[in-house]
Length: 514
Image (cartoon, rainbow, N blue to C red; front, side):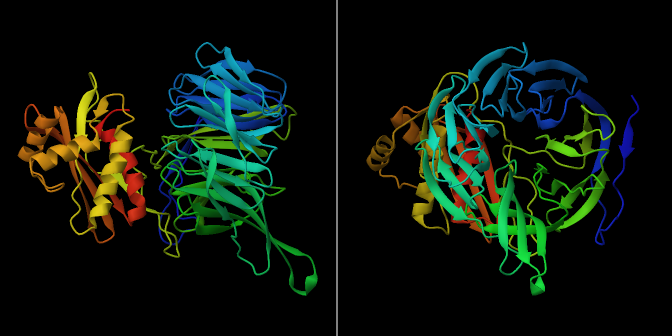
């Protein structure tokens, strides 16, 4: 098959630099169907799932360059596809309200969840594959235990249909956006609302807005909402329409930035894993194309023409692949998926949120958290280790900040199967007995405390603030050898006290394997 290289190293409409990515057309995958409804990559980027209007699912092995499965649970359109984190299962949701769980290697259906009762538009799995969530032609969001399919409960709070949702990386929150112009953060364990925010992103006076779609960054730091804005023209003659993409901070719900100038409703979009670009369907009635928007600059860096009406798109988590589905205008029931290999776009890393992105208005896309040491867990093999987490030092910060950091890290480490945490009251009793302060212990002091606690490891740490930079450092001390086994550090630029929880969530897996 003939392959094409599309070099994007030209200025185009840019005045301040050159486009820094390239697309390489790996292949065009033909699909015999009325329409392709969904495409999705597996977490590792090996598999591509393609769902069509007739209910068929094509699974493509990108590494092998061949189709591995053709699946069908019913004859209803496949609206959403999700792979589990281990690339062992594929989930499909159809307009009939059915979710089918497929074994990715045998191609067999292993479970069917059929109690949504209406059309499902979007499904997602929690990062640990414990919970499955679905939304669609309903105000409620359904939450099931996975993979058994037992209904855990319903999230009730939206007044209109839910457009999309996603789990936070920690798995304890869900963020949803609905047609009611509200964005709700949910507590997963309590099935309760944690925060509700109205979406009021307007660029024209006295305008109305309608929600069309929602897309989430891979690191879950922000959500992009496709918004149609409309206002009465001057003199009352006709209407003015704008098709915008507004970004909102996950943690606060605040508007970050609005990109203006798309030529149609933004119903198809993909945010690059490094948060540098957002790709939109920017077609007109006469011309089909996708646009690469530079998020930081708020401009289109490149438009790429498509050979037919665009129906679905997805970008892989590693930043190496882009898939865009479209209809052949000359042949009924003929569709294609263009599979491009990407270069110049960094993949999403679980322990780093990528390049800091600032908007033109200096509002920014939130803090950037990254691991500055090795990422491999210090405790990753063998039997459970008895671990005591001592209070962290906090020079220049209030003592309660350090205590809270210690508590948060202790809570995260308690979820590791390789760690047996020593209770806080036991630690405090030994510290009092030895007449040691809660903080400022040396390594030799920590070893002595560990011996009295019958601990195998002691965790010492500190939290520092340098300007707008927050730094959390942790040192793991082996009580038997009296040596530091290793240290781990996370830094957060533009950090605040409120970002400490996210920093701890990223730090904990580098200390003990989950």
